[in-house]
Structures are given as C-alpha cells and as structure tokens.
Length: 268
Image (cartoon, rainbow, N blue to C red):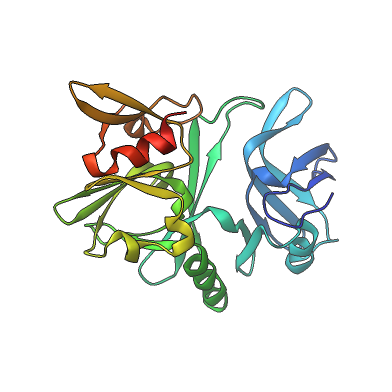
C-alpha cells in the first residue's frame, strides 16, 4: 500500500517471537524500540491475536535494522530520535529544557472499533546526534508555548479550537491534549505579549476567525449561533469522541463588529 504521506497507513503482517501472526496498522504505532534480535512495537489501539488484545508486539526479525524499518514504514510519518527508537513525528508534544527528552502523545482506543477515551503519553530519550532533525521538524510544523511553570510544549495550530485573551495571557483550548507526568492537559496558558498575527504563520491564521476582542475560534468547527437578550454567542455542541469538555456547550460572546462576519460563517 502506498505511503506517500503520514496520513496514509501502511498495513503489514508480522510474526511475534512466539510465532503468532498479527496484522499491524502503522496509524496505531506509538513508538518502536529496535535491538539486534527483536523489535518491540508499542500501540495505541490493540492488535488482535486470537481472542486477546495485545498492546506491545515483540517482533523477532533480523531483516530490518532501524534505517530499513524507517524505509519500510514510508519514512515521512516517522522519525528516529535515538539509536534504538522510532516515533510518529506528528505526535511530538513537548520536551525538557535541554533537549534530552521528547514527549509524545497519541489517542488511545481501549477496544478495537471503540471511540477515543484516553491518551497515551511518554517521555523518551533524545540522542544528541538526532536532536537537530527533531528540532527542525517541530519548529517547521508547530510553535512553542511556555507555560507559567516554564514547561515547554509544541502545539500544532490545528490542535487549537479556541484562543482566549485575558490580562496578557493567551489561553488555548485544545482538541488534542499535551501531556506531562502522565497527565493530559487540554488547556494551555501562554504568557507572552505577542499579537495573534505574530502568534502563527499566515497559513495557520487562515483557520481562525476573530469573534470578539478576546476570542478567536476555528472556522472549520460547527459552532452554532445563539441569540439571547439582544446578545450573540457561539456554542459548540459536544463531539462524542472528544474528552475536552472545556470547549463544548460554552457560550462564547460575539462582538458587534464581528457579528455579521460570524453569521456569514457559522449560520448554516
């Protein structure tokens, strides 16, 4: 199957070290640890072996070293971060201050065919010789948010649903969480004085519309327009697959100067 971009999965079969055959979808690979004798594939959706759900696949093979394995997986959706580890490059969510570790976060399904009901996150060591390509990747595709505690997160603009400005702090409400210390956080506070135009690239800004002096929202989300006592609000109905309750059923005020534009976009 073609794997010209990271959205296109690669489906392949392998045998575990116990000689059991299992089918793997590359979309659900969290990360891979490679040694001379075997590869361990860590998943976010379990693979089935008989009536068992397996989250870690010990793949006994000498056919693929780490470079050949990257080629086999198509390369573009994966990146090497140290001598023994491959990760999905679209799920890098943070780092420590010295670039010794990177944090990765992926949605997890507890049963095959079930909805997203949790997130897996892990900190993995970053090899010194691999740090440059990882830094380049995250700087090219994401921007840095430093919270009040000094933690650093990489955020994709397409993971943000609502941006709220309050007293010099930008509050970002996320569809996909960032994770630290095994905790998922759907809200980030960014203590920075940059304007919205300085916050994101021109391409990223095109996904947002200002609806109030304090609020920007994503144009591709199905916000509903509410009229109450002469005031106009936007409200997003709950998405069944989302765990972030802070962005749903919340009334976001619409400023008078933005009202007509909001009606044009969201009154469908």
